[in-house]
Amino acid sequence: MALHTDEEIAQEERRYFRVFFLLGLLTMLEVGVIYLPIPHFVIVTALVLLAIVKATLVAMFYMHLATEKTTLKWIAVTPMILCVFLLFMLTPDLGAVTRLITHALAGTEHVEHSEH
Amino acid sequence: MSTAAAESHLVEPAESPLTPESWGKLGMWNFLAGDAMSFGGLLAAYGALRYGDPHWPLPSSILGITLTAAMTFLLVCSSVTMVEALAGFKAGNQKKLKMFLALTILGGVIFLGCQAYEWTHLIEHGQSIQKNNFGATFFILTGFHGMHVFSGVVYLSVILARALMGAYENPHNNEIEIVALYWHFVDLVWILVFTFVYLV
Image (cartoon, rainbow over all chains, first blue to last red):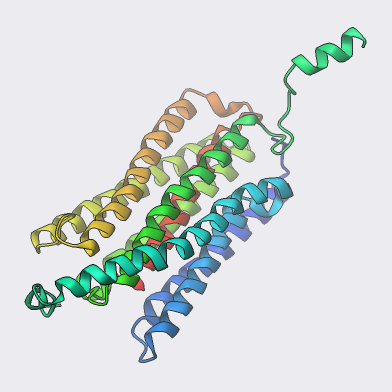
């Protein structure tokens, strides 16, 4: 690891705190947004976007990905790409099966579900 | 072929081309990429199951959002104490390094305590891993993450013990940077789990 000057370290610490305030602010926004009287899919979209922004902030500035080599950035991004594929591969299949089972059980378990 | 050229194929490069600081850092990044896939698989399964079930309960009707928001904030704070520990190490300030390492461990322990309280409360109120898909995905996702926090606390404790023995007086030792990567990753995953399991 390269040795750092005091000024560099102080600058880096200020950046850490700016990221910290942003993370706190975005978390409050997230908690606030779920109580808004807007359609559920708008809430979900907002939450997904906020979560991605927060995760990116942590990866870029706390894990220092912003200053790493491009190949290492690709290593970090690979699982995210695979996860999106996995989600879109699983959802139509597993989702449809669960839907079928839920509907088949709907008659027998109706009393239990109505409790929620 | 000259002898020198032949030998250069046998000798491992002294320096990792991606992370010139150390091979360990590249190793940690690769581990985290693999670990992210485990979490990704669990989150994708959760998404697919939830999508398929029209009776899926609204998480905020069962889970306590306030406590979990506080836990999220706590974990973000422990990420800040971790970067402060790293800053202390870079500045050659051993006292700052040790103090902030200890604070980071404390943050992790309090987080685990809150999670234990939350689980106990939910189980007492009839939730369980066998009851339904909601319970199964909730306990597996938060449990898998909690296991990572626990491992992180153990990992950080070992690093703190080594710091107390003076292992990090050498400015070229980058074990602090590597443990920080792991700890921030655990924080990053919690940001996603909190959003998808508790809020959505």
